[in-house]
Length: 104
Image (tube, one colour):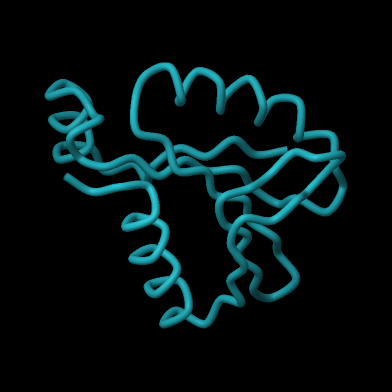
């Protein structure tokens, strides 16, 4: 089973290969931590790694509160495949739409 740290490492490596500047475990506002901050071409992306439904819900609440910050371009969530339901995986496999992000 993948840990959050495993996912963070894999995702950080992928983002660096794609030309992003990557920082992990960053305070982004008054003690609010981001798992990953990826920056490229003047855009700053917050990526939260969540392992279960409770973490996802808490992440969505936090993301909504952070959308007012002017220096955040997008807020995204990374989930291990085991955390996604079979219905979600089916939709992702058969959709032509990109994964959704919480945009300002």
